[in-house]
Image (cartoon, rainbow, N blue to C red; front, side, top):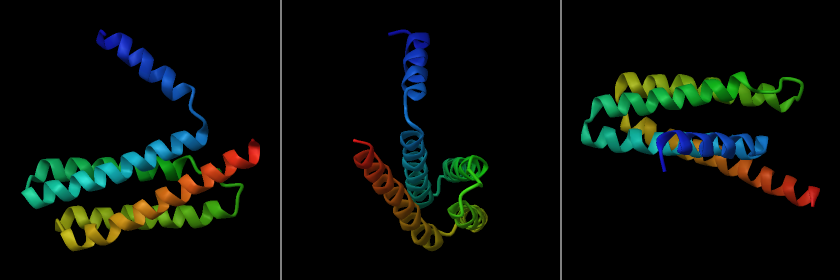
Length: 126
C-alpha cells in the first residue's frame, strides 16, 4: 500500500469516528506518550523524554481547547487539564520520575472514566 493510500485510509477512519471515540483515541495517545516519557526517563534519553511530554502537553491543550463550555463539568475538566499541563511542565523541567509515576495513573483514570461514559452512552442509545 502506498503512503498516500494509507493516509487516505487513516483520514477516512478518523472522519467516521464518533466524538466519544475520538476522545478515547486522544486519551489512549496521552497514556501511551506518558508511558514513553517514563521509559525514556529511565534510559536517560532526554530528547525522547521531552518529545513525549511535549506531545502530552499538546494533547491536553487540545482537550482543553475543544471543551464544550456550556456544560458545568467543563469547568472541572478545564481545571484538571490546567493541573495536568502544570505538572507535566514541572516533570519535564525536573526530569522527575516520581512525579511522572504519580501523574500517569491519573491520566489512566481519566481515560477509563471517559471509556465507561462512552460505553454507557452507547448502551442508552441502543
